Image 1 (cartoon, rainbow, N blue to C red):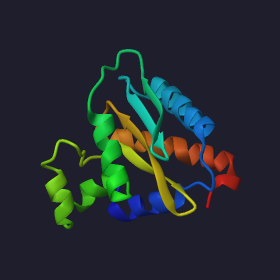
Image 2 (spheres, rainbow, N blue to C red):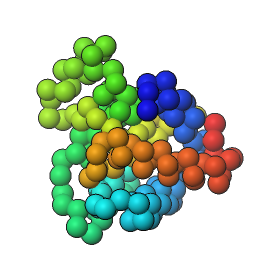
Image 3 (cartoon, rainbow, N blue to C red):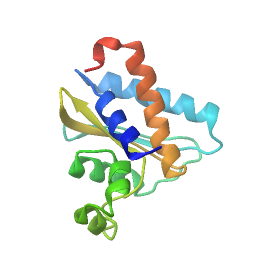
Image 4 (cartoon, one colour):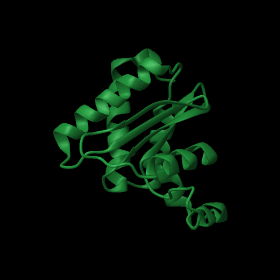
Length: 152
């Protein structure tokens, strides 16, 4: 994946409306996809409008700080955590974040964008960071294709 493709994902995978029921559906789809496709379990965290809506650790997944770190990275940057990974050498702030244990300069966190405004984050952790990112992209692409009325 290259940087232009990432920017296109961020532009394309947005919502007109997001709620807790949709968060639950996203988490269920992530769980199903990971169970069928990957050998290891992941943790999932979804926050919306400042509230933790969902936190789920698949069987066999242990607690770790990565979900919170990815969430903080998304909310503070306004972009996916993978965006900060690609831009850490161009944006000095992201280079500083790489040394700060509150942030994760890697893939696996994606913004919830409603009508052009970042209102939350979807985070996955437990696999290679590019796989964590791709899981979110796969699920959002599938769900938004099913609900074309939800795509901006």
